[in-house]
Length: 253
Image (cartoon, rainbow, N blue to C red; front, side):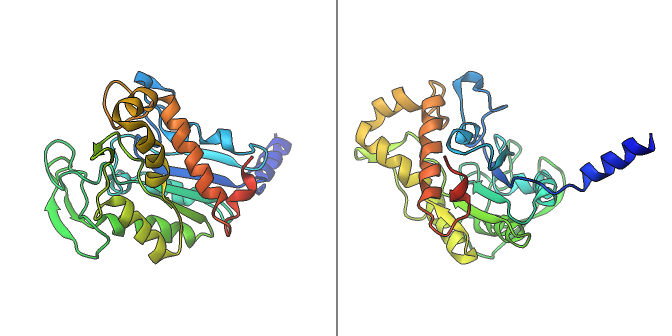
């Protein structure tokens, strides 16, 4: 019995042989349980196809319906942060659910637009708790800075494009989450992957109808099918590959 306890104690303190790539985000990174329910797939569920599993582990903690704010206030971030070790990696992609009401009885998940330091105090109509709500950039910067403090290499992704067209092209907005994600990456010295533009490039060539047919579910123009998830995952991998100062590149196939 004592021998068994000794062996277990040794295993508990054995350092990891491989780093871990952590993913956090919303349903466009992991839809449902990540197994294609209702034909919906997030790119985080298929990104492993681009990595050498002998060199890195991947843990996808993205969850549907969360914004950069509610992923934190739900208590999901702290356990992940505790697990992280020097030499690990983190990819963050939020934005879709941040564009929501800050306080209502439906979701109450919105953040203040932009990357400023302004805040607003609310009595949350869902949680019934007093809460200070910050900007999208504030929450994103918190994730980046806290992970980097542990020696983790961080990538910020701009949100995936939806199948929403304007004047024959995917709709872009100057003051919107892709821009703010880039600014967060620049301000925190994190890596940036412009996933929004990388995938929109392909959508632009196809147009609304063909993009819908090839890459999206019948349900809506937000959630991708398996082919759409694979396209976004491939573009994330391209973004990593093109980040010359990243150690994560070495784990790509």
